[in-house]
Length: 343
Image (cartoon, rainbow, N blue to C red; front, side, top):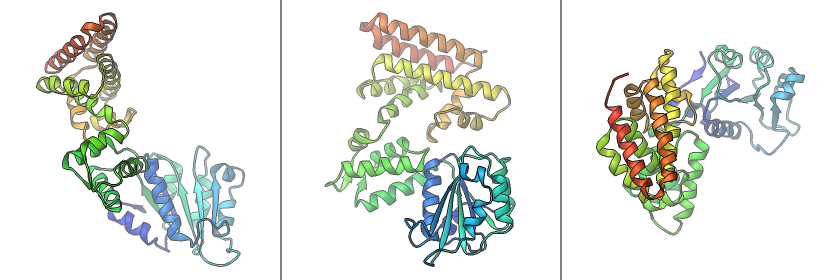
């Protein structure tokens, strides 16, 4: 097994092992995949802009000419120096071409294969994991510790500090894609240029999906049966600019998502796996409440909740003067029902 894990990944990227000149970088976090591929390319050639030092190959090129990857790996740079090959794997099957490469790799050229999420049974992944000449790096969504480290790196680079509440909000708003997370933090740093400290208002003003933060609070509280929190979180959502109709619409989307997860659980899938299988990705801070909701609700009860929310959505449009009361009452009703365990 040549799959790298934990601290070994960063060590390898900083100083790639010459004995493993083929590197497969894959995973659901496309931003992290690209970040690590770029770092490997920079560590493997003197000038990534030099086409004689770095060859780029698309999977479609290999589909028509499987031998090209071996030919490129064994090409001697025109002006000397180090050489690398950057392969972008997509829908085309390039397993046979890579199998030939790992069987007889070039010690003078690093081949970096960039791929999306690959199942354990995927031929490309299986070939590289078995090959002694290859290293495999999986890229999954950042943990809270990873995100905290990225925030610290970017804030230190920008010579900024974060207020505690701003840090908590920022952690809740980023994640899922490394590149997107870095871009949001850098956008925040640019927004607060001239300051020395980032406050909560700065985060809520500039970071994408900030409005979703308060909506998630009231929805998660309702479906997890936390009645005491619903009223408080509902007030925050309204203060944040979310209309009663928007809150009910968001609840409808949430219950539909929960129903898909619950069906997966009913078919034998674990709760965590069911949560991860339904897009869009659930932020890790929300997962405990979503898991609590899955324990509280059956598929049939979620369908009834869907009907209840659809009726509430219609009533908020029919009676705009009562929309806030209708939305709040419906969410409180859901929270009470979540505490019941009947079928």
